[in-house]
Image (cartoon, rainbow, N blue to C red; front, side, top):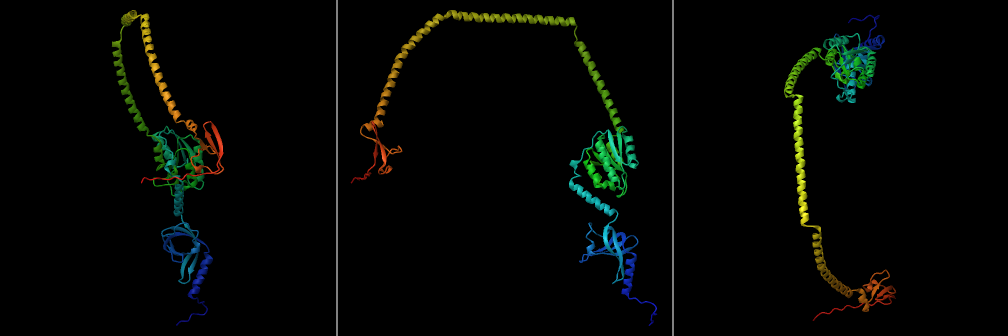
Length: 455
């Protein structure tokens, strides 16, 4: 067995790992590391254990439960993250590892998460609803373009408009389309174009780029400026596969700036063809109309009469009307004369004095007949009257009182019909044939009703 020289310091494995750990903590106190999560483990303790790797290397990591409170996204394998950590060593196994204190999504992951969160929130508020979108005009004479005046987008737009329909007026509202200040400038340009109200439609555009390059069009301030814009607004941002928040809020999305220019401009060649076709149709219509007028003119010329002939015709017509009028008046006078003669004959046959004499005779006869009839009717009425008076006198209460009867009434004027209707010392009124007397009840005697039966 070889004995180690005493001049060398001999360390245990634990001491070695402890010294290495101290060296790491001294020389690498705080680190920011970016990598992809793999081999993620979630034990019951709540701590996270995983491997952080890139294309060429990997390192073990641990994140304790109390450091996970600030994480707002889901941690999973394959997620690219940026971590703040300190280097250390697990003394039990001698494994080198990173102790994670803070974690956030890296690069594209952060932006994509922000994009999805804002998209969901604005959609919930109704900024993407179709009912709030303005219809694009069918006839456009003035386009306002919000973009960088030196970018490729404006060159593509102007080239398409010049080729298809160069008569459309274009106003450029310059703005940055990339960088930190781009969102503010885009908002100001939209508000300025909307306040000018000189354009038929607005076009918000820029060329393609990465998610970071297009990020100003994903800012909430830009989305709300588009939503508040009163003019129709079309978004044409990036390439066909690129989608931004501005695309969802705008009234219409075009795949590219060139596609937007084609959408807003009619094809001058097609319009020219339409004009040529319309011209041909108009020429045919004019020829047909001219022929119809010629035929009508020929027909009228054949029907046209000389003025002297027309006057002669009118004179003949007037003479005929005069003859018919004279004959009509003559016939009417003859009918009236005949009617008058008929009335005169009837009047002579029956003069008024003769009629009056006849009526007087009839009247005398009616008077002679009326007197005995009235006398007879009066006699019948008198007989019925005497009979009714006799009957009424027979049933008269006064007549009954004259035979010695009286009617007793209480102090309230109610007719007394039974001994139970009055009491001792109660005053009653007795109505006689020639007046009334007031009596006081001193005694009440009730009759005993006896019944007799045949044996």
